[in-house]
Amino acid sequence: MAAKGGDTPIVVADGSLTLDSAIPWADYTGNGHAKTHPHKGKLMTQVAITMAGKSQTLTLSGKSCAVAVKYASTDIIIATGDDGKSLVVKTDFSSFQPGATPNQLTCKLADAKISRVTITDNHHPAFDASASGGTRLVISYQDAGAATGSAAGD
Image 1 (cartoon, rainbow, N blue to C red):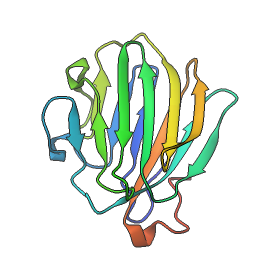
Image 2 (image 1 turned 45 degrees about the horizontal axis):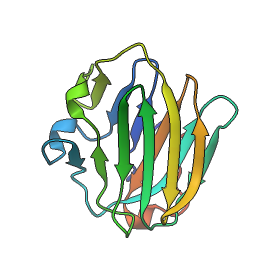
Image 3 (image 1 turned 90 degrees about the vertical axis):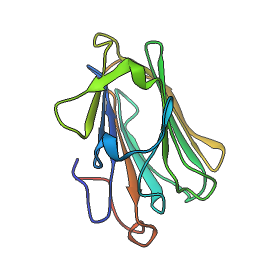
Image 4 (image 1 turned 30 degrees about the horizontal axis):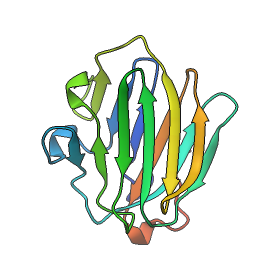
């Protein structure tokens, strides 16, 4: 899936778990288990989910959103503030290593699969499903004005 316009997606994909960001990971701020996206004024607008039997795209409300992914013993949470902005990625970053590009992190545990995906929108459940391989999430994070009518990818 390709980015459109002001979209700076984050892609979470299993196989060997990877976190791909349109922004290099070195540009994120924060230490420890939380890193904040450098474009704090952008809005999480949608999540495209691909998994066996559950593929769909969720359009988000522009309020607080969270995407939680379980991969073996590693939890990844990609969440916003109450206004849908100020995206933060929370995980044990010591479980990851640099990937093929500055925009990619790969999990050191390469032989597991994503086992669960949970998404909340405005503090309400929007998606909750078990997964068993081949899971991919594209999280769109866009300028608030570009959010209407724009897609996460082709």
